[in-house]
Length: 442
Ligand code: BES
Ligand code: ZN
Image (tube, rainbow, N blue to C red; front, side, top):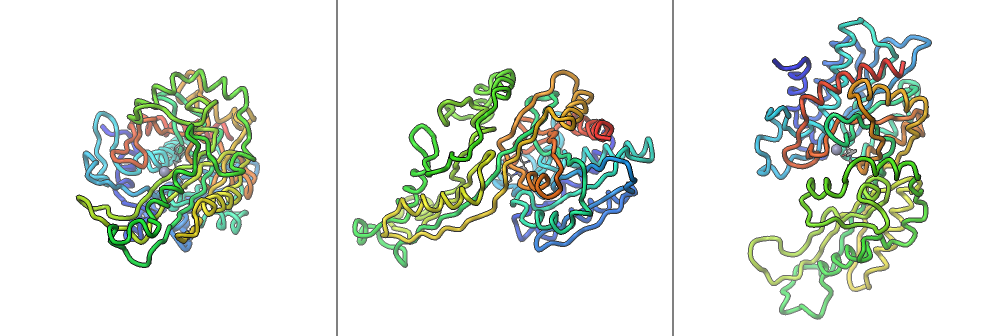
């Protein structure tokens, strides 16, 4: 027997709502429409708001005076499923194996989002009412940096006014361990294109007399770090807020992070900024990453060519109090300073999201922790995450609401990778979590 709500989750998962892909624009919209209809069946008023990109869904129960207002945020878009040949079963056909649902979006974020919807469904079936004024905000552009959501918040402050924002789109440190995430890294993206000759050239005829764009792009990539992994962009660390003593101590009790990360990643060794543990590096220190590098000949065998251009795609993960715009400006200046004027450099600044940090010991943080304890029992892990949810700091800036992050993603959920999966057990736990959370926040 499938648990209540599972069929709905499987239906939601079948929409290939890949926000970055124009080929999936209609699928992404169909996904939003399905959710709108699903929320309407709960007796909520649910409206789709058009944006230049994918629609934003806002749903509400009847708001009554004197009640707390909780805004529940989630995203219905997903990352691309490629490389498709590495999926054991089709990426958009949810398949259950050993108690886990395998599908793109199973964890990030449709499984976690539907656990909330199922929690609401069960509370409404039992009590015909919710203990809070509820506003649901589901967007379809989180995986591309939420470009249209901040302007939407600014334009709809009254519609979205709330006391607290709740999100399940982060991790659990281990199966069955209630995990409270009180901080996220921010993000800033940049793409650099190195242009050399106006046409591809024979590398024997011209090699040695002109600069090779691939070599110059590699030089850019190599200029980002010292040999030990510190970022070399001048000013990069200026505004970094140091870790607090209590969190360094708390994170040491979470088990052997080194061994776990080696096992999860299959890397031969750990590598990173000296002076910090593996968790501190991932959760509370900023980074520069090369997400892509290319140019020249990529096909089979060899080809003696000097490609006319090459590119690198970079992203920076940021921590409080770094400012994404300031970091991008510093990065651009640094990259430009690396290359002699033998090639030209086009730099395109991409999307950004602020880092986020709240106090997990606040009254509200404690209420959220009680909901986790009721759901999972045992000790609650207090962590930060290395991933980004670009809109979260805007909830604080625009709506003046804190955001406890109560995630259900397991360390081996394979989010963004082939064979993404979500345990049915976590779907059931998430359903309970939603119910306890609304009670505690009320
Ligand atoms: N759910 C993730 C964020 C996340 C991942 C939080 C892991 C905690 C742990 C979210 O959907 C995501 O992937 N965000 C992107 C945002 C980016 C594309 C702007 C990210 O972090 O890369
Ligand atoms: Zn994601």
